Length: 428
Ligand SMILES: *Cc1c(COP(=O)(O)O)cnc(C)c1O
Image (cartoon, rainbow, N blue to C red):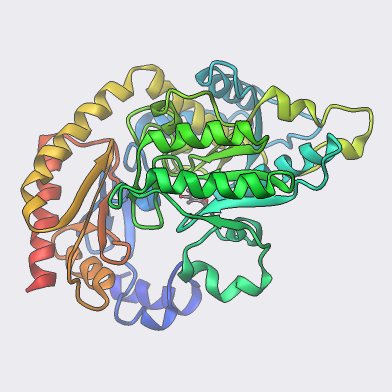
């Protein structure tokens, strides 16, 4: 099957995500046959560096031996069992290990299927825990401007990215959308003041604030300081409101610590959400970590005070086995290595600073903005990059890299050269 054939069949039969299908003729999907480390190889044998880790999930690149072995072993033992009425070692072990990474502060782990379901779970748990405590009025949610928390209706209600939200706006819950911090504008203090103003007025009705720690990903890799998060933790404590740290994108070592929250040095949030990288791009899984306090609010003889939420594949053993294999890498000192990798990216991309604006980086996320970008910049950049063996999808006029943790001097130099060459083509 040659590449154009497969792309054409896909266009007819597969409704692609996050895609205006009418544009697929201009931007045919790459027919990928296999993956090897950071490379994706198409059906004609051409290769592309997966610069965004296939939507931020492939921490160790493709076809990672240790992950595959863990899944194969689990496959031959127990591929699935329901987690209501049963339990199994991979789930228990995963929950224990994640809890230990918070020093036991977030010691209760609920399993979901993907990022959006984790967001839904945390929002429901927050509301329901207040209700069980006799504070049913606390039913409003707060998110930040330009936030992204997924695209099911509940998650979209706390998302403020117009392209995803606008069409469905009439269907959504009315969350409070508060000014967001952005290091490019240096407005962290103002953003906190806006949050204080809202919490002062509405704290009796507000269940929780949800935030993407340090980096608003889908907004275009908007970065801000841990100082803001310390302030937000203090404010949410002061006003008795839960804080949900959505680490679906920034968890699992992306920022240089396992949880991005660790950069704050503040006490833990009430919820941490993980997905994307937690299985290294092998199985769909998400996790909602929460505190004794939230957990205790559901503890009762009354069934309806329990959290009666479920997904069919909740706690799937294959996914848990993959996640445990990912944690093994962190236990073996992966973070020291990713910090060295991040430094290589810094050095390789430094020469671009004169040509672009706001070249910025936090750990293994590097981004810059392209001034005076031409119309359809993101699509054009993505297409032109293919000729330079690069799979990359800018957001608006922001180009970013979120590569697999496989950056040595060669791959760092390759990425800088391929991105620069693509930029030259697009701006020519
Ligand atoms: C990707 C993402 C989600 C949604 O995850 P899905 O698995 O796509 O549903 C939620 N929050 C953040 C911060 C994300 O990056």
